[in-house]
Image 1 (tube, helix red, strand yellow):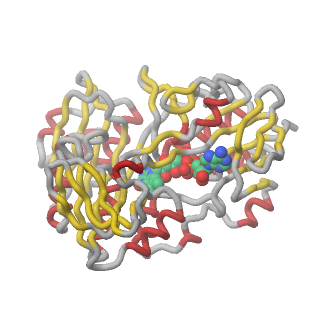
Image 2 (cartoon, rainbow, N blue to C red):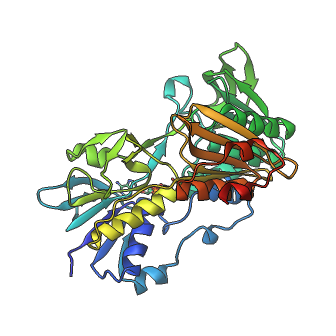
Image 3 (tube, rainbow, N blue to C red):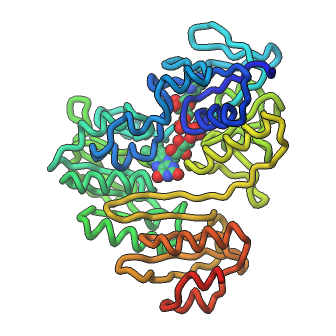
Length: 405
Ligand code: FAD
């Protein structure tokens, strides 16, 4: 039997790795180390149904304690790995004890960027949303009639804004860039999502940055914005992106860029150490990217499980993502990096749309807004490598099924 696998990070990828290995009948000893106090759970509802109070925490957890016991997976919670000694093949815990590994998996995720203390980032009531604790604190703040400032018009900020409006808060969202979703979606998608938020009463101010947050008795009470205005706020959600948790890898001398560099087999520059999920910088389309999604955390972890189990199969990401805002489901298939052309297509139902992305004439991704048909068709095209027929795409009355004929 192989020696011990130590998994650092009890999140989406860490759990997927352990579960896949056990499904493959891999019986090696396994230890998952997680800094949170709870068993692995899914994060997406933290800015959606859980935050709305519509989903209990036990429904977020992948498995109860009995699964870990039955599958002989040791879990150490509320503790974290401080550093890695690659020559001794041990990890050192924060209490100074060590755990020996034969193989090590880094599934440490990412951390939300915070505002510097100099602009009021350390004031009480300035929050981010990454884990259960964050979401629980936010839920306490989300009281009807209160004034919320969301900083950042990415998915997390927009989802939190939607929940806040549904709960009856007054919401202002500021985005420093020209438009919301600048980094992740085309202007057509941004326009549709902006209109939806405006219709629900969110005040969206693009090309508007934060100068500073102003506190009263240590708690945020106002915000000075780059257009000179000062607005009253009761609390703030900072949604300005994440940074990969790559410190352990960096300090132990592994190759690290904007994340832990891995090859197609999820190996880092040390063949006994794998990395996966939000913390990994992986090869895709001749570039190195980090994919911050459930799809990547699970698929990359499962690919690592195959490799650890002796199957040299490369991980070929097939990205997909979703975001829920109000009654709108945005589904994304593919990876739109480097797109140079987009096609907007109204869907058959009112309020449904899709945005198709092309790079050098090749179809690379689709955003489907309340349009499951477009999502499924786009995903199938990407999976099969078939190029969509442009005439059918342009003919808004044509059934998308024809694209697959
Ligand atoms: P994580 O799930 O973050 O797990 C990493 C774990 O490692 C954490 O528990 C961390 O505390 C722990 N850790 C870090 N360092 C150490 C250490 N040294 N020792 C011990 N433990 C350590 N994706 C989608 O596809 N769709 C969505 O709609 C969506 N919505 C999201 C909403 C929110 C609010 C958030 C936060 C994320 C969302 N995501 C969504 C992204 C998705 O949840 C992440 O991409 C995914 O959780 C990444 O999995 P991971 O295992 O890499 O990291």
